[in-house]
Length: 265
Image (cartoon, rainbow, N blue to C red):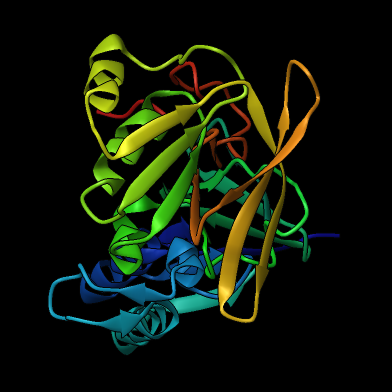
């Protein structure tokens, strides 16, 4: 049997947005609870160093996460480790947030800050070298690869645009795509093709990431037409093959775009 708790506000997710919401809810004297399945911090925890957050010239992602959580707690933030299974709304307008731990949280308002998850390639070495050469955020980590050789994986707008962006840091950026043409917009493609520091490797898919104690050293590839293997020397690889928003928690139908992102006003 589920236990139930009533609050003024339930915040789902304790990344930067959720922690900020908790801080302001506390300042507003609301009885708010933050539900997070892991450690507070969200995607900050997947970034080693952060150099572009106001007030902190150079700070570890996990350290900034801890400071944000502590700040929210100072204003009364109640952060709980809970795995949210669903969010639904009763006929009277009250929201019900069900968790795997057996507690039903009830509130007149819910702030959903559960973020999303970058689509993984799920190949050997991807998890091992995450944060040590393998990344999913060019803006976050690009500056750490000045003068180095990078591989960008993907063929959509994100991959092509971020590859062009990364050339401001890297000496060479290879874009690895499993097909013989991009899905990205023509404007982005033309910009990339005109960049002398960028080169496209067509009809290749990643089979493995290899490296050593210092981090990533190479990206192993397989030709999607001939099946021939090859190896690309690179100290960094940025993966842009999709992003899945965590909006599946909401059980009722809501307005969303083709990718599943909730449309708000």
